[in-house]
Amino acid sequence: MEEEPVFPPDAGASTQNLRAVTDDGAAQPTNRVENEFGGRPMFRDESPAGPTGSTTAEIDLSEIDDDYGGGGRPFPKMLLLVAGFVAILLIGGGGAFLIATSGASDADLAAGEAPETPVALETGDLFPDSIDVAGRSYTLSTTDDTDECQTAAHGGYGGVLTENNCQQIVRATYVNEESSTAVTVGIAAMGSPEEAQAAERAQDLGSAKWFAGLQGEDGSGAERMDVAGGHGSGARWGPYLVFSLAAASDGRVNDSRTEELAEISEGFLDLPLNSLGEIVGE
Image (tube, rainbow, N blue to C red; front, top):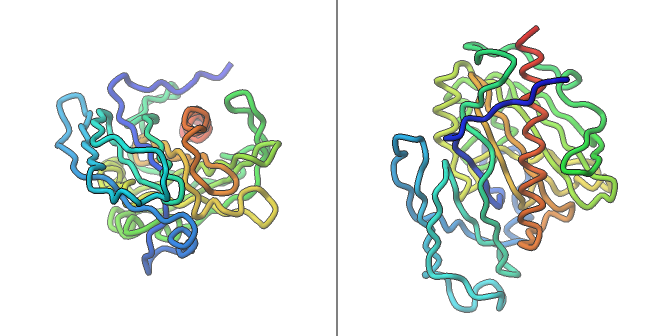
């Protein structure tokens, strides 16, 4: 029986409703987000990390126009969240947003100590044709392997990856049997653990400076993953950053699915972490 990856109790987290931000260095199309979903980042401030690695993020929603969001439910004046890294994005149209915590930072894999340098990754070794997560079956829809890391990121995060010697990003997108949920999961191989940490710290999910979802073919249930809003989770192990984004197949954010998408996103993180443990341990 394979050992599950072990996450330290003080591990950080990163979750967010993501939208693409127009950027010349980003390969993923972004105009559909502005046209159909709207939204703007609501991240106001973030204090320095404390001794345990946690960060306090204060999100102020008081400046939202009363008519913004099309008459959705009222917003609290302020939300105070404590986690490794949290941010919030208001999605226009229905006034929906998700807030959650998940993932881990500096994941401690049972396979052994974290490596100092990355190895070449193959999608066939990392991503099986099907997987069960949170009680549901998912089928592999599409994969991508690139050494042009900026093409697999949104906003200015592509430049961050390049500056920190990103060598490879592998991604896969899975779709459930009902074609109602799609998940992009991936691994970014940085040049060193220090560069991976720097790239992690530069993430700003509130302005979509993060990894991009991998779009599937039309009719696959994953055709909107490049612009979808959903629940993102991430972890770091040595020179590797792992990430997952769970979203509704139509790309829209529905706050009634907060817990469901959080469970799915977090569950999918086990896939790249377990695969990395096996590959590095060989």
